[in-house]
Length: 287
Image (cartoon, rainbow, N blue to C red; front, side):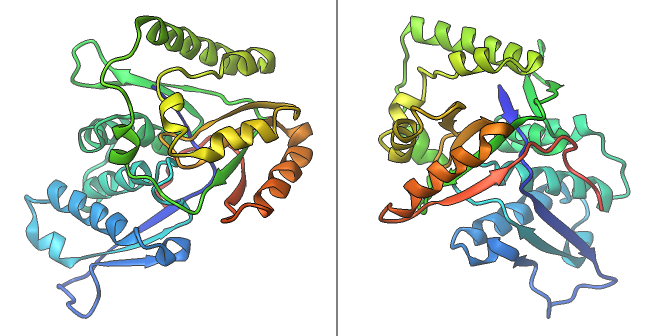
């Protein structure tokens, strides 16, 4: 699987008191995340994970208070849960006096998330290629250096999609030729990134396994492809399962493409948010 780390962040602070302080909420939400209705789910997810990982020391857990400040939009395929999981797993080690490795965090995070790529991108930064090892018990991951001149414009609709909703529209079986086509193109995407080959990247960003089915849930994908059909973009794809749409563009064309997207967005009944982003190449930091 492939994943890309973008420079939009969550900060999770864990404070350990000498004794339980019932006057302090267990989870406090700050920043843009605090204004969104799904934030309670985010806070609950972090606390639930920490509870499971620290169940051998319930006294420690009672003394911990969590503050989450995040600008990652929720429920739109931008990896907010992966970032939360990475932070919670890392903290569970540190709070118990252990020194975590990225492999430790990735393995534990994969068991919680079910698939490793979002956690891996949050941990390591850059573009990540990852999957299960031959024994199926550990995760193998490699980091690719994303081309510096390839920028990301992310269009975030005002509605959200749950993972269950995004998966519900997918067929239980796919055509053999569609599966082969996607495998081939995935390999070519890796080659295009490794070689910074815009022409190759532009020609292989065509999906046959999930976007044809999810377009009905995210009409902005087709609309943006039509609007940008004459623009010098590298690609226009769903971010994860949606609802966000990711437009890849060379830095030299960024302004004109951003203007075209902004003009389109302004006349929509519910104008989407537009994020002008880079790829984060460092990954998670302990502050």
